[in-house]
Image (cartoon, rainbow, N blue to C red; front, side, top):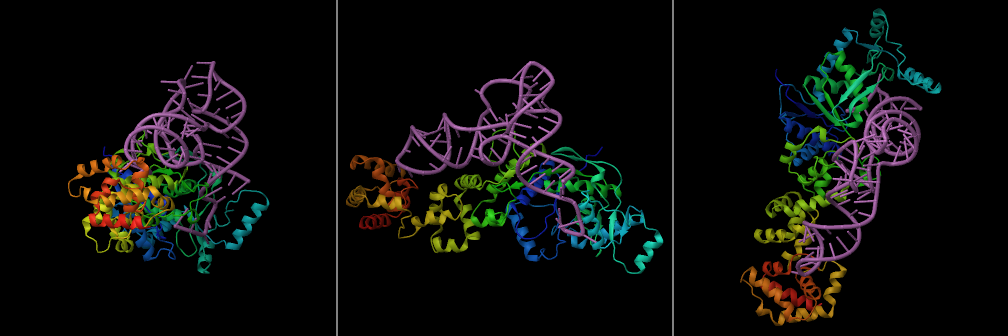
Length: 484
RNA sequence: GCCCUCGUAGUCUAAUGGUCAGGACACGGCCCUUUCAAGGCUGCGAUAGGAGUCCGAUUCUCCUCGAGGGCACCA
């Protein structure tokens, strides 16, 4: 027997940049597909014409590409089961709606909005659960024909069988729903456009999606979707509902909580590998203590069994910490490429016109102290620019101290003794030996030097600064600092 | 209101019907180091509450509470 190939999809509504919650869903789908050797499909749920602009589609795709989630089939990629935009699939929806009508599994509902509202209001007043009363459920063929002939507008409702439904969820187990919770719901509006639950089922079924991995908010709608699968004799796929990502106050993550989209994190200077790593850990865990994973490692390790059930609060501090770790380990050359592309303006302002090896060295020297990419401009500027800007008050105090004068004075007087060009070891021992030359505690001795050369009492090792900077530049910096 | 889901420290999480409930972020201390970061050690800190089953429950059952989601001719 042939094992069915895993096919999963990511079906965003292109309304702009991708929300981190959506991004995590995309990542889970991607990882599952890759882990199973399956197919990852990209479909556009672009029926919201107002918001689904080309511009929004572009920024959404930019986010996906930035994360590195390449898809095998679908929008812009093609495939045999397209089209892959919902707006181009209307004829398919129409055909299946017609089929349901022909088989009397669905019917035309001529009720007006007012009538339905009255019905709903009455139910509420009587404290009953509102369900569609079924006024149009059993109209005679003649009556229907007459209404249609008269041009009465109608929606299409699906007949719901009197049976309980169980959703077999790969993350949550069996979830039971009672038949009385459902009424004959609308699958196509008066204007003929199908509602989301219908379109998505047709799309998923026709594209032979085997596993639907999506956010928990869809769990309650899954029974309705299952009714549609059954009515059309489609095979019901496997479901996996992932819990939501929450704001620190446990509310929905929104703009008022700061950055919420992938695009914003990119602009703030986060690395895609750090974002992915962090996002994956929100809801998924290996069964051990490991926390750092490359995408390749995630592909081998990922499983739906490892996905948790409870909602997760988005903790930017931990993301930032993780980004910091990734930055410290990343090649300076790779960092430089990103700075040039994503932070062109700041790059030009800080490193413009500079020899690239100088820039690389400065980045290499300071990347371990950066939390997000733009930090590098602040940190590296004092290395590559002629004038040193003192970064904070504490550092200012250090350079103003009498000990600082003493140290800087000494260095200038013995400038010729500094072993420039004689290698790391020589410089190292010279820096070491300073402690014998100047009778000061290490802290008092070294921090003024760092402030003079780097603008901050914290940062690179003194030895590295002496090795990295031009001797003439060092002399100048010492003089300037002394003159302060 | 009805339905569904979830509930381990401030946050992300691991584990177990029976060892000190483990790791990470954050926070505090110590070590290392010329500083910060990194690294090492360490401290603070959790099984929402109540019943029940059991020799024993954080784990199984029920109730309560809390949080989130869904109930549309939105997606």
